[in-house]
Length: 115
Image (tube, rainbow, N blue to C red; front, side, top):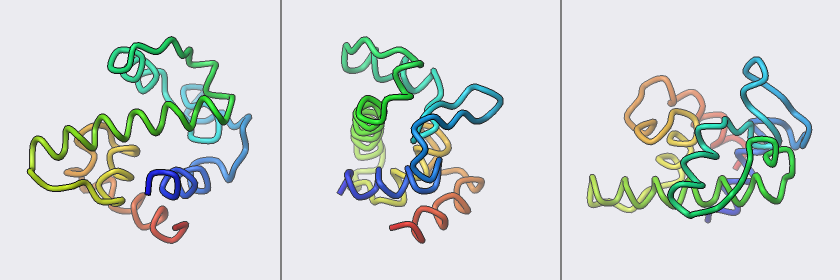
C-alpha cells in the first residue's frame, strides 16, 4: 500500500526527478522533502539522515515511508480508524494534521489521479 502511494507522491511532487529542488530550495529530491520531515524521522526512528540525503531516491523513499507510518499510527490513535491513502497523502502535503486541512484536498485529487 505505501509503496504504491509513494510512487504516486513521486509522480506528483517531482515527476521522478531525483535532483528536483523546490519551495525556494527548502524541498529536495523526488519527494520534495523538507528538513523538518527529516528531523522528525531521525527523532522518531533514531536514523541519521541529512536533508541533502533526500536527493538520493532510495533514502528519500525510506524517509517518506517512515514518516507516513509514524503519522498514520498517530492518526489511528487519535481517530480509532485505519489511515487511508487519502489521509496519508494529505499528511504528506500538510503535515501531521494535514488530513484535517481543507488546503490539502486539491493535493489529494492530484495524488488520486496518479494512483
